[in-house]
Structure formats: structure tokens, C-alpha cells
Length: 323
Image (cartoon, rainbow, N blue to C red; front, side, top):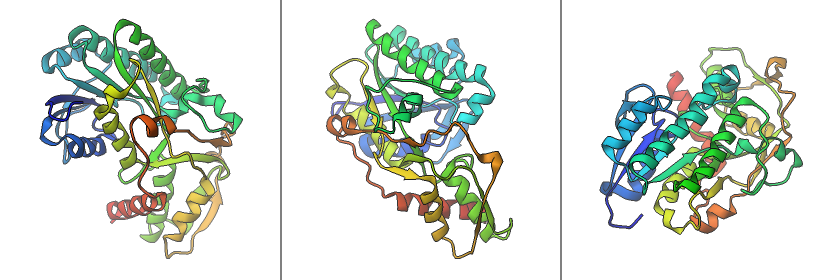
């Protein structure tokens, strides 16, 4: 985006984990040049984004009306089901939100603001079974989804890529695992941190329940991920094609066991680790790691925040919330 150009940015799914961080990153990058219109399935007040207005992306008429009304220069499509478990529990809703919600947004852009940019937030998990090779995954790796979350996100990814042939300008982001303060305890890092904080507050016995600790995953700080999205908007003109794809990843495999041990080291309490069969996932891919050299080369993005800092900040955030 030109350095002096004023732009309107529409953000869907702004009430989720990433939305406030992205708002802060956009403010740092664009300042007063950017007007941010934040939406979520339910209206709410956000310290970073201000008033977040209601928008159900599965309602085509409402999506059309809003995009036609505000005429955004950029649409950041964050709206989605965050957890694999929730998508698997309600696959019909996952299809409606991930695929048809994304198509509603894309088609409204083509209809009312065809020169505008769609920044679509997908997932590195769409590579699915391809990750079983153990190799670092580039953007050319085959999408091979293995569950309802992965397949609905992969379907939207492919559908938006095809719409490039109809003129859609869309950057498809494939972020790998990201975490940080404010994330739900349904996810592994805040899940461990929440148990530690509850033990410290004498709200549960001094034993932490765990699932498979041997799996290796690629983790990022949410603040680095939000920065990548803002940089993608800022550098959109550097992309060679209408629907470029960028992995957002650290490139560093971390075992779940090492993450747990590092979090336990931040506590003064002596905590027992107990394996819980209900938390075991037999289909776990042993190693899942991304290659983000394309984002580094074209967008100039690299992760800046040490993962030790991420864990420290996440644990302290949960300690404050429990207190």
C-alpha cells in the first residue's frame, strides 16, 4: 500500500484471539492512514479496535450490504472456527463458516470493490497428511487434509485461489501454530499454563494432566503472526500473482514435552505430570513444521519474539486472570 494513501480495512472475526493483536499491528504500520472497521459474529467492545460490529459471514446478504456500504480497500478475513475439536464436533457449521463464509466475502469484493485486496487467513494444518513425511512444508506442498477442520480450510484455500481467474486479488496466509496471552485454554500452551496457575493458586491438586508429549510442532507468538498479516497488506504490490500464498512459521520443531518442561520451570511449585488417556490422540502426526522463506524474502517478515518470552507472557497472563 502506498505510504501516503488512506485506506479502509474491514476485519472479520475481530472478536477472536488474533483480532486485537492485528488491530495493534495495523495501527503501528498505518497509523491514522487506516480506518479499521472490525466485525465479529457478536458485537462487542475491544480496547484495541473499539466497537466491533456484528456480522455473520455465512449471511450473504449482510456481507454484501456491509462491503457495499463501507467500500473497503482491504478485507482481512479472520472469521473461522479456531479449534480442530470444535470443527470436528460440528462439521456442517465448519463448512458454512470456512468455505461458504469465505466465498461470501470474496464474491462481495468482486461485486462491489473488485480492486480491493482480500487477506485470507487459512492454516498450515491444511497440509494434513503431507506433514507425515517429517520434512519442512513449503507453499508447494500438497494439501492433504485429514479432518473436518483441515478439509474445510483447505477447500476455502483452493476456492479462493481459483477465484483469482475471475479477478480476485487475494493473499492466502497459512499460519502454523501460534499462541500467546489471551488464547483459550483449549490450546496446548495456555492449557498447560492454566493448570500450572491453578495449582499455584491452590485451585487444583499439584498434578498436571497431559496427552501425547512426543509430537513436535511449529510454534509462533501471536504478535509475530499479526505483524506478518500487517506486512502482507503493506507489501501487497510486491506479489507476482493475484493469489499468492505465504506460510507463516518459525521453521523450528518443538516437542510438546519441551514446552511443558519450560513452563514447569517457570513455576516454584513441585508439580507431578500425569498422562491422561482421554487427552491422547492416536492420529497425531509426529512432526509438523513449516518453511516460511517465501514470506521472509517477499514480505521481509521474520519472527522476532523468543518462544521463551511467549510462554512467560502467556503464563503470567493466565495467573493474572485467575487472581
